[in-house]
Length: 84
Image 1 (cartoon, rainbow, N blue to C red):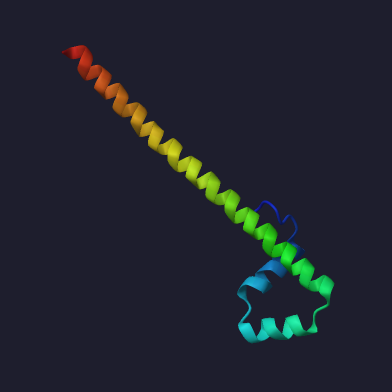
Image 2: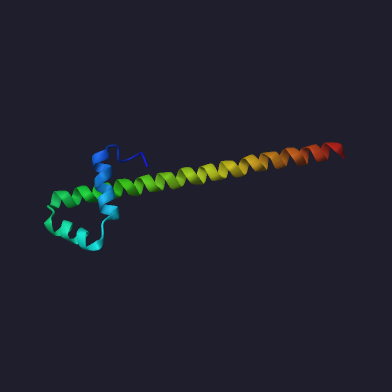
């Protein structure tokens, strides 16, 4: 998902954080500096923003799709009214 994380290095680090097992993550945490942990948090925060933005986009697209059908239904109803 492109967006708030714009380089492959950061994307790979995010993948590690998201896909690693609990034991490996604990070992990583125990051996990490405060800067490493803040960096990891910034990656997770950026990914959260990406997910939220993606959800908003999907909601808007869904609403627009519904409006297309509503417009078609209105046209059909208008046609029927004209024939009466």
